[in-house]
Length: 341
Image (tube, rainbow, N blue to C red; front, top):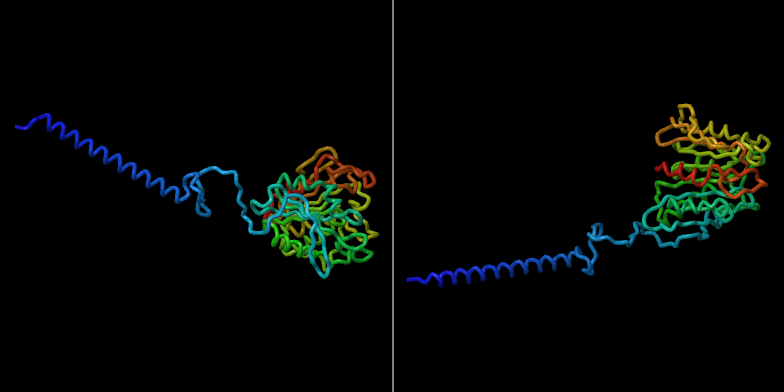
């Protein structure tokens, strides 16, 4: 006769054995998963990164660069290159965010005579806008004595002797090779004769440059006429009291009026609709022609009492009144940032 107590003990022993075996198998399975995870870089502290292009699954403050160009420090650097047989210099300003991803480029051409690259960088303070918005800022230096750009032909001949169109081509190529550049967002702006240089570049290098802006531009006849390969966005900022690049032009020197330049560009950009006011405050009225070719627009900021000055900069009484109603740096970047090519 079987003892019920022995049967009960045997059942308990079998149960314990199965339970212990299950626990052991579970532990082995967990250890296997942990080991695999460590090798795969999933767990923190594994000492091995995730595969390229995959998330590690944990938060990190470390930024990785999307650029394979040489590293550069933030701030200003004075550099040079050879172009058309000459050594040309230029100042590059990099924002603190430079290097983590491709950034837009803004090239700013100084005015005639003593307005050098360094002085223009300091006076306009456009570097502050570059730091805020995150773009590469470049100030090219003109040659000749006094420094001048080959912005076109006036009644007294060429405004400069160097091949500044080729210099601009070479400068863009240098920047795209050596810096982390968004090649679809290359912009140019300029002041006075530098604004005239921007106008010439809009006529001749529209395939390489996304959008254009001028401040108190001195506009001259472009050799061969203005024949851009495509319509492009154009912004013009000008004071009606400018004595050096008059709003109405200067027939004695062959300098075109602001209205003549705008009319030309409205035709190039195929603008059909009437203008509209997009900003009006104190001495500044901004006008836009929106019905232009796809991806383009023409804008004009008219400053009723503005002299030959950069809006928002420190006053220079010898050049006339400097409005503080707008900051040209912000206006220009807000305009540029709308466009990509």
